[in-house]
Length: 120
Image (cartoon, rainbow, N blue to C red; front, side):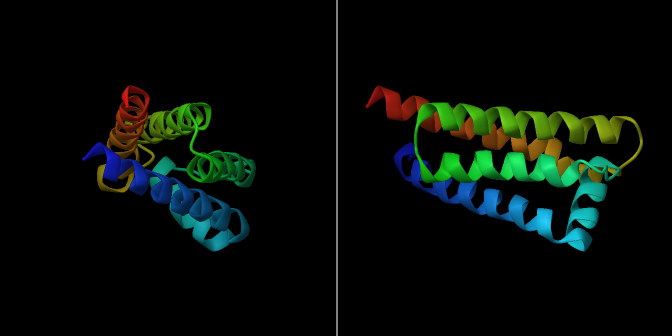
């Protein structure tokens, strides 16, 4: 099952990277997505999104462990800031829960698929 999942993880990373890069160029979509998940939009949000988008896109395109580890770190950082926004009262639970609950699960899945590749 993890072999099939490994293929899908590459597509998920590529799609998520492209979505983050799309948010850099679409101010309206960026404000909606970032504010609902993190509670506020900062002036460096486009730079942060571009960095995370490039990490995830390259991790999906070039399947190596270093890129996957960077993608895991990227998801965990995003999850941390989403939980921080919720705990500070800047966002509602239903808006930020996909970020601080779903992203660690995705990071764990990437880690497990990476481990299964090493064992084969």
